[in-house]
Length: 249
Image 1: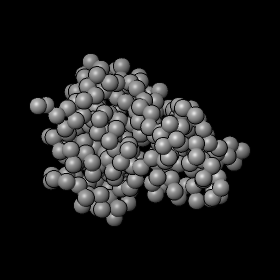
Image 2 (image 1 turned 90 degrees about the vertical axis):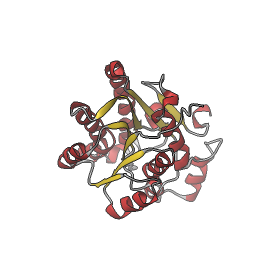
Image 3 (image 1 turned 135 degrees about the horizontal axis):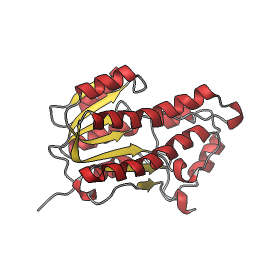
Image 4 (image 1 turned 180 degrees about the vertical axis):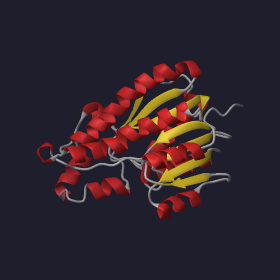
């Protein structure tokens, strides 16, 4: 019997693999048989992820995803890829009236500009195999907004969805699929740190909006595996919503 969800012998690049969703996606991909190329800024935490991977012949390349030199080194050091998961991202709670060009560019740089540029460079250097799968980590905020003080974050995630649709059309002739995952609130170190200045009452009120409660990194990882696997061979140019029912309310 064919296991359509298997990632055996596939080589997958995961950015932002040193924590949270990126770490969980990396670990679960290795459990499904993939060979991983993982990146992240924090060398110590990236080592933690690397030591948790199942199997062997994995690669780790530490560095800052916003650095053009690092991107060039990453592309040069990458083997032929069957999948890419752009998980690196940042969130800051900044009301519009307190926003600045520098802060906007910082958020867009990590969440949108560099993932798209990295994809472009990997494709240009022919490091992406035909019939590969590219997965961008967007957000439910990129589809329906929601929440105060996340205008730049929501804008960066909406941009990923728009760009992924065009990439899907351009790359279809190579059999390369391009999709987004659009999670709601997922409990990670990054989101907990970003929300530390919110009151307990505000946090409880927000979680109450989710009929199934907040998500966990494993909830996103399972959908990433689906999009990376042959089980999703006829899906491209879409954004899969993972929000515990938030958008139904």
